Image (spheres, each protein chain N blue to C red):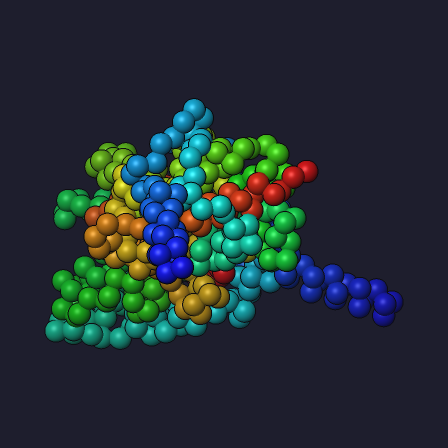
Length: 158
Length: 281
């Protein structure tokens, strides 16, 4: 019994290593059209958290530029980016993941910031302090947050 | 009749919260006509057909505050600066008025052509730099902080003397290199959000970014009284805030980069009227 439990624990630990290894921003592989086929975490995205990332000013703040019926309960939708109603029909999960991580690979010169990128910036700052960044940058969203947003956007069907 | 009045009031209230009427015209105090929309200057014709003051992008209520000096909260600072203009300060026993006399005569048209080349100093000077040069070298007084309330107020006093006159900043000759540097900064994407001035203010003016209505980022209205921080704001303070909001290490107010950027951005407004002190969100 005890041995079984130990084996089980070991198996879970191993599973975490195998499946839940996060792909670092610099290791992301962009395919054709800027898509990312592989999950960044191996953990299925949580659409409920994904929606929170979209509407929360301190997280993704996607609502600043994008409007959708899907977050009609949040006021003041921006209009800089395209409407995201039905976006799950127009783009695959891999394409959505790529656009979130670095949309410039899909749309050259787009205004959209790259949410999973940590280098190649001009005068990167320490968040919104106006001061220089200290040490390595964190991506704007974590790998799991990207997966969560992908999961939510994938539910937006016409 | 009464019902009509109520309907009109309701409509007016609604309009205050609605988005700006981009076709409204600005007349201050009933007689001073302000050009808030005109053809883009030649150097900008590849990018824009028309240039528009930030006033056009504000809500009806904010627009109205600038239409009467009694309603414009920026005008209080003008009164204070008029007093400072006549006040002797510094080791040399002089006030601004000692050399320049009546501000309403000597300073007409000055704001409209700044930043400009100063031949003697061999540099591009902003109005703030010139004010501080006078204070330090002519008056023997302490320089104002570059973005201080005193500086913003003095800039407002000078702006009022040029209100209604077209912005007419030179971009060639000795300022050409600085202007080019400013243009490069305008189109450079900064910070972790990787945004240039142009991304928002050239490519997306008129669009909402959350609850903010993106303007062309014109500076003909500076110094600007912002309802957001309830004070007069200088151009470099605004630049600093914008660059900060791209998650970038911003530049120093009064530094070479923002001087160049001010010259370039001012020149994008050549043809609009001087408006300062304006009222903005």
